[in-house]
Amino acid sequence: MRSRGVARRFLAMLGTRGSRCAIMLPMNMSLTTNIFGQTATVPPPTDVRATAGEIIVSLRGLYRELDNRCDLRPGPEVDDLFGRLVRLVLTAPGEAVPAVLNDLEVQELAPRLRELCGRGESEMELAWAGRIASAPAPRQELALFPYLDNYRQLSRMEIGVLASALPRRARSLAFVGSGPLPLSSLFLAGDLDLSVDNLDRDGIALEAGARVATALGYPDLTSHQVDVAAADLSGYDVVVLAALVGDTVEAKRRILDRLGASMRPGAVLLARSARGLRTLLYPPVDLAALAGFELLTQVHPVNDVINSAVLARALGR
Ligand SMILES: C[S@@+](CC[C@H](N)C(=O)[O-])C[C@H]1O[C@@H](n2cnc3c(N)ncnc32)[C@H](O)[C@@H]1O
Image 1: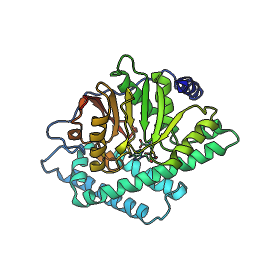
Image 2: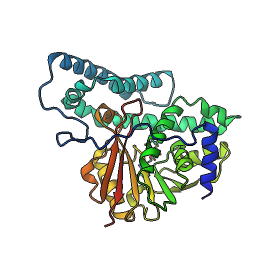
Image 3: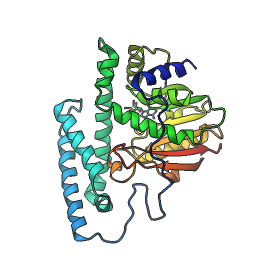
């Protein structure tokens, strides 16, 4: 429970207290849309094909450059490559997306690209966790983190989605895959007034996250080293599943199945997902894997937030 006060102070420090979701869209997957957000089956016109072709060439080039690097720790070149990849994904015209995702080479490259993105994100979080934890002025160092605003925007969206479905007496939230830089769980804890536990299977990531919290003056956040594939989460009212937990669509399916069996009836799940070209960066949640849940809603951002949010309520099995 102490994490509530902790996170509130943290949020006050970052000026985010009271923020609410900016984008709430109704569930908008249609019967003709698959889990990657592909829709059309009609052949695209020539100019769309040309644009899709250019995007595919760029994707191939960026993939090769990232794959050729043995080190994905942040630095000018790695930052530039990931920056270009993210911009390409976010700025591609919507009408070209089905042609890109239907391309056989892109389909083959996608899991490997996601794997590179996951490694890059872990390295980036670990590097910044180290910088923040060892800085003479950790809060000033955190303010230099280039993606602070992205983390904040994503949390605002998730807080809005969660607030629409929280059980009345919700007290506890498990953030699964909190990682080395657990900023999201701090934002969530502060705004939703819940006790938050950070869960991660990686002891190094958990320890780094705890050091960040301590360096920022908040040592009371609880962390547990567990693999969600074997964890009992029946003690929580809310579970948030980070995007990189379940690094393939299939692995995510298995984890959702486990969560459906282990979360208590009525508990709420928020699973980070992705749609359209964003699925080249993060694995999407397959809605068919939510057999143990009632699907409540999905939010697909159209700004520069990358992750979608899937909200569901556990049925109890
Ligand atoms: C690098 S963090 C990044 C968090 C990110 N912002 C997101 O939404 O995914 C992801 C963390 O998920 C953890 N993780 C991956 N699979 C997991 C599992 N099966 N159980 C618990 N933690 C897991 C990793 O150890 C890693 O620290």
